[in-house]
Image 1: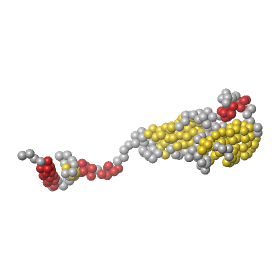
Image 2: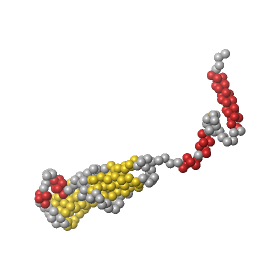
Image 3: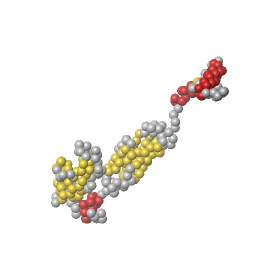
Image 4: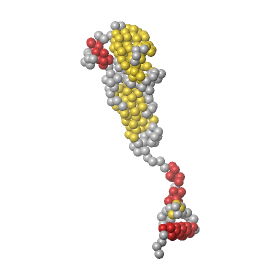
Length: 264
């Protein structure tokens, strides 16, 4: 007689019930190793070393177990040299246990480092001098690693003057003949702050003004006398809308205008 699929399923179900009853009876009087059941099956081996018992006996050990973070390595991403006197770098940490603490310091001779300049994952610094940037990271499991790189600053008064004349080979005497020069603002485009560098070779009154793209005067940023030297003005742009703007430097017999872009 051919069995229907329904009859076969019934027989399988009865056989499964018999198997479960027999195994439950087998382990019923075993108080040392109470079995664990899942989907009608005993979880464990035939010698009664059940997974449930093993885990239960070692619960405290498991809860206190911490995986090792491995040997930590540290470096940072960012510019290897600065074409303008500002740069930002981001720490990269591999292995070790988080959270990490960060210590950013700068040296101008490679030996003497000043105080902590940054404690975050990212770091920004602006300077006219070549410098050494050192990052020290401490992990939660007590590992400490440092990474140092020499950062040359290619920005100089000569480059500011070259941006005015188109001649990158300006000599010192030629530069000194320019009483005033305006550099490129940086970072450009910007979101919340921008720096406007300029060079004064003869003490004079200067003015820096900000205009929108249509030429409408928005704000006078600088209106004062400046001594000879390299100077820089910092502008907070958080209150300005996204768009193209113009900044203009005016001095004795000198006017120069450049563009900046603000992105929100």
